[in-house]
Length: 292
Image (tube, rainbow, N blue to C red; front, side, top):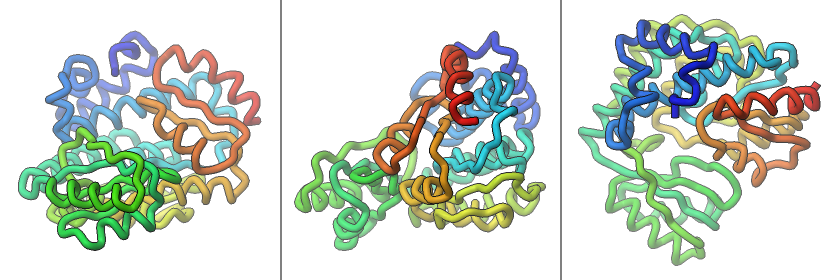
């Protein structure tokens, strides 16, 4: 996913992140295979790095001249959102993401788990499906009719069957390396807390909607990010919080376009777009003009 960006003026940021973390981030973005990137310690650092490359490219293409009302990030994306809001510098964010990935990898190795997307049911029914199952919990409330369950392999399978009995249209296994945003990640919390305590946070310059409570914050990020590790991502509610503040233009920065789709299903907005490749930057100017 990094290959299209190698010749872009924002690419040197990757070298800075490699130096900050002691990892070859460029190799992860360009040369790593699917099996390598399935390991969460690799996937998290790669996704964070590319999202920052996209952020810097967007800023150089006009985003810096637009007043940003608020930011939010889905799970790992919350770290990018904090960089965008000035609460973290890129190198500090990369060190935290590396520590988070290592801690979560160790927890996943010690307590193996998985995740599955339940399509066609809202959170209350997915929670009911999980309530009678050992080792399964709602992990991501992404959009109406799209909730992700995390837990042990047996727990997620049983919760999926229970969800189907309640009317789920489909239960789709996710290619992930662990049961993220569930109690199975509790073992990672101590290691992440140590990294968070050592990190240098600033007060955010714009509102940030946090995953754990779907409300606006400007500070208190060490506690919020620690809780995020084992708490469900309340993304649908976060989007509704943004819309409730009058946000009408949503810009997704980073690999993929899944979040833009969740926006479409969760709130009524004037405009939404995503920037994932250098080609996407070319159409960003018109979008930003409409957001002024």
